[in-house]
Length: 545
Image (cartoon, rainbow, N blue to C red; front, side):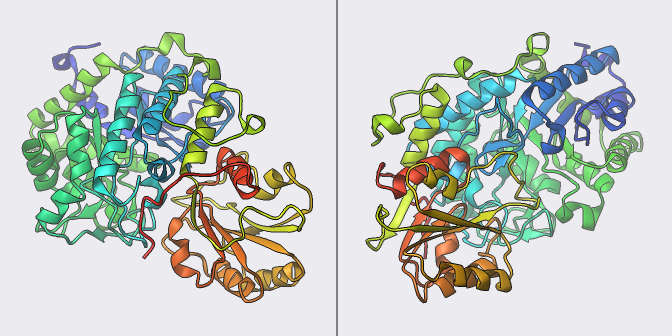
């Protein structure tokens, strides 16, 4: 690795950029960024993934390109949070539970175990940094972007699970990234779409938002990601934390003592790009104290950010010493972790993952137990996370009566949702345990006409299960209408497949169950819960009030 003083200004600034691209191979965009602009980091999205083997080869190819260009090893990252946020959802990558499911177990050992499994698998395919865990405390039921990505609404619990995840990732050589500093949990606006403010005083922030980050720093977290959120009690000027010197340098560096890498959330998000523009925002983020600038999508914005930072140094707006210090932090991390396994990239196998630890009893029969170590881990956690909020005598299902299931499918990509490449519906899972199961699949945004057609079909059904799915702050109107109309003639079993807060917008659920995610492992366990084969032990990590 070249000494820092041997790098040109352009090479140093390149190390400050982490960029995404659109191909499943090394396309023109990422090739130019590596060879011509010396970028030091790459971020993968679902668009880059065809298979685990393909991604392994891609990681090796990108590292080879950097070496051929005489550049430093790349820092390759991904948002593999678990649960509903998983950029790599192909065979060979374990679909570990998401944060709120883990929070519902009340057992941070599960979180440690999942992070170890996922960390080992990520490292084996050439990924060096996971942009996880989310340590935002989700205490706003209307939060449209965090929700089940949080461990819950209790700061101490979030901190404990966050430290467990950090420990697990970094034990496998993966940089963990605590996000979104100083806290994105108590917001009702998605910062992908607009500006957000957390108005609380400093005392409240210390007790709630900041506590998990302090614990993460004490645990030695490698990186912390900023939030595009305004905190007037810390920064009186109307600017988001990502661009605030008072937040990033004054609070995070000087007061909280963080010595690792500060990475921005993507500067193309509208909370930043609309009022400032990506290029100007990149300069302001560096001035504020950020080390790593994330620009995830557009080549024009990526190049503009690089050139704007170089220009700011040449004109004296940014001291070259500031760039020097940021690059030194990045290079120190790269010496320790980045690209170490580039010559030995292999596809992850279940046999290579950590064995399940004994973290408590799980009520299951021999016939329902999976056999593979990772499957057993997922089964245990699902059994410990699924939460029966209340049961009006409708569970377990009566085996002598027919069952009608309404199942919402995610078919459109949004900022907080991506369709899975492989899914298993509840009707499919139930039909393997018992007969007389009918299922009607709807979109997550059904029309009233579609809901009315379902009402006629369900009229004679004896047991009705309605699965709801909310990825934003409110249960979609079509789903809400359907549940309310069905409840006029049926005692319903309502299952919140994602957002536990759906209950707040349902007036008459007969029984209410929360799963926090709709991954295949959870759906299979849920089918055993509904038929009486398993007794779940999950507890709500948030209040439904």
